[in-house]
Length: 260
Image (tube, rainbow, N blue to C red):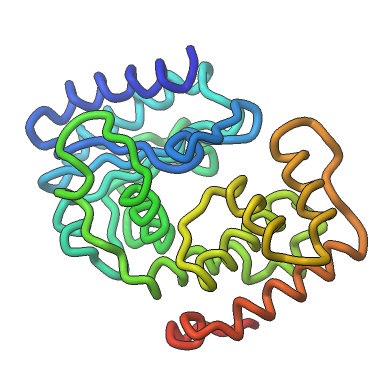
């Protein structure tokens, strides 16, 4: 199965489980941006519901993903179920009813009922997921995006994506491609208000970060293929330059964020 066949299987299963409770299902992330790669991307989607899930519904929804896991890409699925009331108007912090990713797969396999019961709360990542959905999201089923998702305040989106880059100075050597491209797309947002994929962020960085083109180009090539990732002092220079610009931006200061 490819990514769309998997999504169709999931959609059909979720519609069966939830019926009229399901407001809609929305694909975001690399698939929505058009830069999905089987070897390096996950399958991202949101399910929006009209009311809270029952324990039985939670277990059945997760079971659908576990059953399809052997056919999924290496990074698997990333799914959140949220109530419509948290999307329109946007709730900050954003609560979720249910969440699944590879990080929680083992816990669900060991104790499906217990994990479904305890894995709920608030997720700062949802501000980014909902922003991307509003910009490029694809409707798998249900109501149009604009009738379900209110605009996310810019400071909420920035707080969400800032979490991905705030420790880039310490972490970039461990995952240079991820951090290089995320730094670029975060800077594109604070400077121009652009909501971009990692690939688009790298392409934006190539055009706007003079002196850092070589390291960004290498990160893009590695992201798109099996080419070697960048390394060395060029990465440190990129981090210093980009974080400096992000932290000096008006929106960063107005959001009350800190570089620590």
